[in-house]
Length: 112
Length: 291
Image (cartoon, rainbow over all chains, first blue to last red; front, side, top):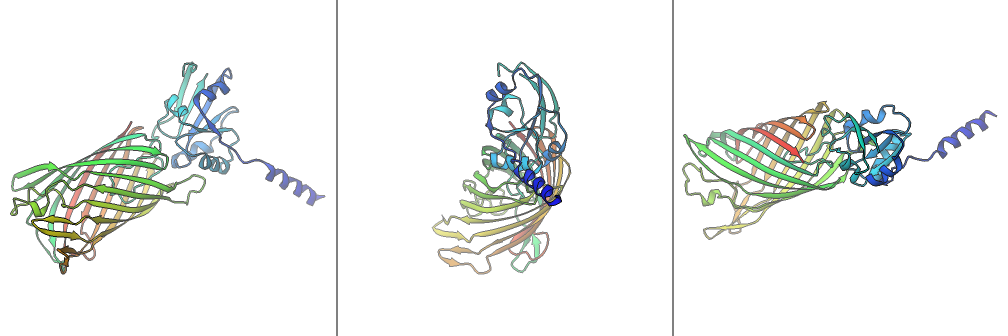
């Protein structure tokens, strides 16, 4: 009984998909968040040493993580390591620029 | 952007540029981070206290300028998160006995490509960059000097240079470390009917540092440069190879999210075995701004 429970738990854990950070443009992000009120957007990059603290903080439901100036594979590896439970995207180049983000880490509250 | 009706607040954005680090060699004045699309650099270096070091390592008074000033102007452009290119132009001034001469130095262009990027997912994986640069010899060299007594008009080596190398850097933790190794190849050049061909040089730099805060970083390091001997018309000059061991300490400070200042103190031929080179001390103050 115990073995079966452990096996079931292990299976459930391993079945959890790794976080993904698909490419996203500002226009598409606006579309997905339009009408949802104020949304927290956390910018990070895999190569950004000082982004560690912002990745480890707790954020409210609906927070969106955006890997900027980065590559998708690298962003997803970080999302996996830090067990990001929020939506994650890789900036195609327009999100950081459009929201005025030039340095990392950055956290912005936006309303579309 | 028309549909962006309200940007409520910036909760945390300061000190944004003190992220990944690179350039452990410290040989390139301008290093761009992936989020810096364009960056400009202005640096001033005064080198003084020259002493000649002969083939046996013995020190003697130097006959050239007492001080050399260099105003370095550089600009860089990021191509991808892994690659950037730079262009550099030094403006030089030699000083001796109250007299001075100024001229443009040798301009150079270069680039770096990160074969391996640092990552928060694997903090102990180093950044590995390939380095390639070209320096165009246009400034007057020792062999073209018209002031052989003072050498006030010598502002370059007289040889076009290609430098290639690799730069390994651990920068994801507060304690940082790196090693850079590069080789420089010189194009043989004719002066007054004689063909001068310097041998290649090898330069290795070890550096370590500490990030005090996300905006302040101190680096200390040492370098070793060995240059093969000079050939004239195909004949190698005996005892013409050079060897120098130098040290440096650098303090980086981010003054705002888009700009930084840097102070570097350096000493050439500072320790160990040195040969056919010059001992000197340098102070560099630099300002860099990303756009």
